[in-house]
Length: 217
Image (cartoon, rainbow, N blue to C red; front, side, top):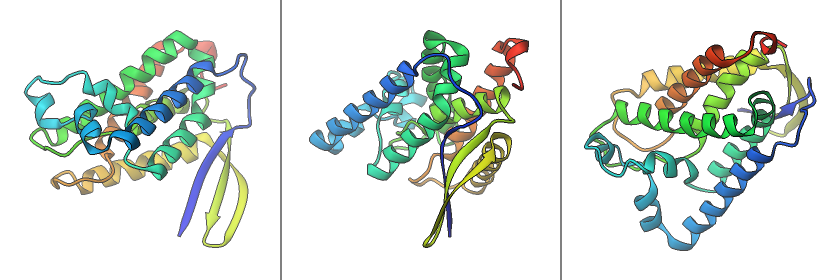
């Protein structure tokens, strides 16, 4: 079984330090330690419960839910992906626009998950929908960039370089396939609809916003 972990963009240098990306990671870490301290009650209070959103209640959780995670692997995986793709998008958009984009992408992703199972009582949580929005924008802005990635196949580990269009494109197709496969299933697990919704938001936003000279660099 193969695992591919993106480590960063090697095709460009950012013009400024990715302060907002780092702060988002820090907030996610802080909230995760709060989860560890306060347990399931904290998670259920701040996570998205689809049926509550469907009835117009606890709408703030559409934001707070994006800063919660289900475990160490969940948060580590999400933060690695954010650090791989976030700095370039923050640099292209500017810090304030990037923060607004990230938070809005997370809300749109959560709404997509809620739309798929509006009567569910299962908590939805995680930054992956917002990060999917970042990846969608990255695909529009920098499709030819090479992403340094860690390839892990059982005991074989090596660093490889993969075009962003290929890495992100394959990732999205996997999310789309899995979203279709579980569309009628009410269960916990990976929020594929959130990934798809966040990604499409990122693509559309980048296409509408991006200055022409910034595209396809």
